[in-house]
Image (cartoon, rainbow, N blue to C red):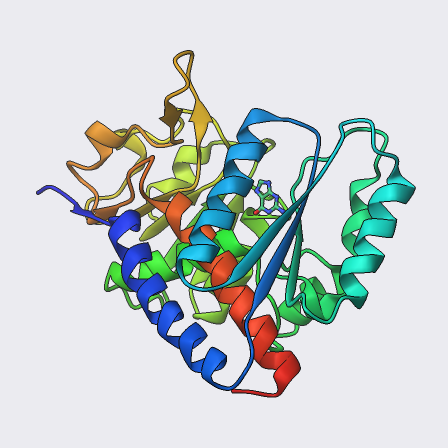
Length: 285
Ligand code: GUN
């Protein structure tokens, strides 16, 4: 049986329509959400990612600005920009695109974002809240993954969920979100012995390592839901996921393509969190 394709592009489109309506209702109350993105340097992938976020924001009525700083900008200058945006009452949400050039300490910068404007959910205060199940900003890719799982019609309670990758941006927070849904969660990483022995009983697989072809049909149980967070450009610049899509889709119950799976959902969740930031500071539910 061929898997249900979790069409991130379409799911994102529908979700953004709902967000657009919420933005309109906020505007009727006199509030317009604004997203400010800091980009340091000229990395091609980061630049196109940041432009996509701006375009998507504007399409649903969120004001968006890119603060584009030179590659050789000092850490202090980045911190000064952040302080300005933290204080600027017109700004609802702030996002600093990573990676940053080596002269800028990434952690120091992320910790300088006002936690109430931290739409990426990277500030330690927000990470801490996530881990004690308090409402907070949740990193956007993990949020997008959970939304896709919702569309897979799977009740996660008691299911075996296996996450490949333990990054702070994806692997660890998505594991926490799966745990909140009462899944039994296993995290695999570069030191894991015998990955296959863990994957073969997985009802849900979330792969987020950036290693094309890592997950093959031999790894996947019949009917499992497979979410592919990998997006590694090949020699022709074409994005490749971690999962051997063509063969795995023949046995999985549901699967995300790359591109067009998790990617559009990540951007959608940036918009979601910007709207949430605006609502929270205005005391609107
Ligand atoms: N670089 C790659 N992914 C992300 C993300 O989700 N947020 C930010 N700020 N930078 C990134």
